Length: 395
Image (cartoon, rainbow, N blue to C red; front, side, top):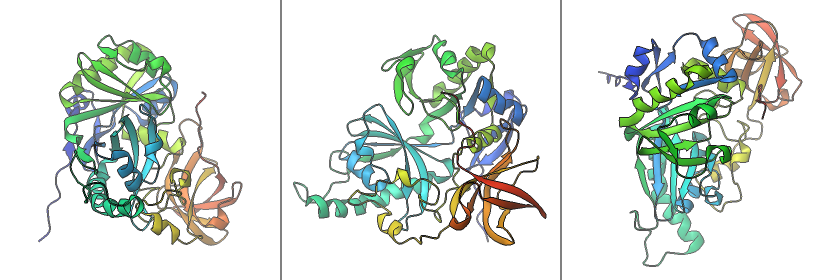
């Protein structure tokens, strides 16, 4: 007898998507819009005007109180304690083996207050990683600092270990992306900015505000390669915010966008996707994310595992081809007659007009300019190793 899989969850905006004629797909255990009209039209809207995405499937955790900064330095690969309040940072949750459990964005909202946003499919894995770290962190800290006053490290919000709270089910997250995003956001009368004005907000930073009196968190981050914002609001106000954004952007070319456009946008921008470029079998250095790891930290989860990984492990590269046929995930990559790797993501780039792909290949075949071939259903397609990203917006 086998367990019946749980049905996919629905976003708080599901009724809005249905009314707009969206097609849906199961993504990370959620029933999410894959497209509304056409993948190409939605992709181009983000590059040329603006697109609105429902990303409420992402997982959100508050990590606060106690020694939250030190705790996150231990459980994440980067040094988040060095962040200034009001800033965001891309980081990684690692397994003890050094493989990637998830990639996350961390926002520092106070001296010992952080918001961590993780991928939908890894919500449980990240929660488990936080829980495991609570027990091992106390031992690691004791070896560095000696025992804290009073003896054992506490695991309550009033002690040394922070309170970790999964708030995914109480909030909704939408992404407004594209060159006209700021103007659209500034035109909404119901939005009041309480801290940093949008025209002063730097990239990978956030500001706080209200939407019609309710709390609104606005981050200048995204997953498209364009400028834009991610907005966190309570579930009860999600539909109102979605409607207000679409109404304000109607004259600016704003369209609702699904996961298909989000995937081609992030691929052009060379941004990895968990389950494709990232997994527990891949280390940060292999994925081109070695810069994310603060290896000089005394102790962090995965540090010993990183030291033991082989130096000749496959590395992530960009591949550019001619013609119209694109390599897709799982297609072999060859150097001469030798299979040296495999495509992880690939598509005919809507912006560039030629096929692009990311692949893991042998380090001996990873030098930019190297000509390889992709086996596209039995046909060898020449491809050139190219530095990532494929697309970079004009500042």
